[in-house]
Amino acid sequence: MLKLNLSVIAGLALALISTGAPAQSKKAAPMPASTSSGVGQGDMELGFFGDLRDDGTSTSLIIGASVGRYLSDNLELRVTPTISFIDSGGVSTTVLQPYVSAEYQFNTRSAVVPYVGGGLGFFMLGNDDFFMFSLFVTPTGGVKYFLNERTSLEYALSYQFPLYSEVCDDIDCYDA
Image 1 (tube, rainbow, N blue to C red):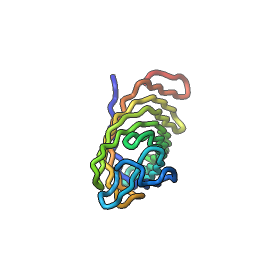
Image 2 (cartoon, rainbow, N blue to C red; image 1 turned 90 degrees about the vertical axis):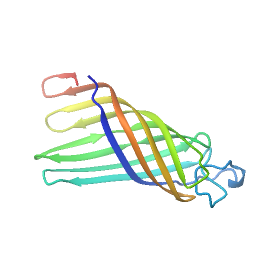
Image 3 (cartoon, helix red, strand yellow; image 1 turned 135 degrees about the vertical axis):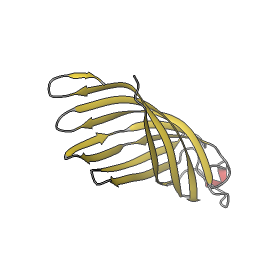
């Protein structure tokens, strides 16, 4: 039985344009309509996000970053490591979740740029009582809103479908 996890990530993505060919030689790409250059093949993108929640019984902190490189004007390959710290009922748990994704960005010739994609990653969760490992695929979709040529806000929605999971306690390991 597959468990379906839904994660919604909203954060600030800083689109840092690398130097390369003159911006005028690039095709129109995702960015505000008021500028003439844009994000394109060979450019880099850095993103940062986080989430802090405290509901009185549990506290969680999620910190992540992403590094992307545009393989073409619309296709970005991105690596995203995420670490989470969770304290619930006096039990502290750490989660490490890196993944690689490819995203196709639709050139709207405006500041709003929707995208779709997918990726592959792994999930490791551990505390003093057990350790869990999972390999997953994740379809994703989202939208970027470019504030200017180098900075955008991003909202993403993704599902994680486990391909393989295993849990280990003090005695044995078993499929999750």
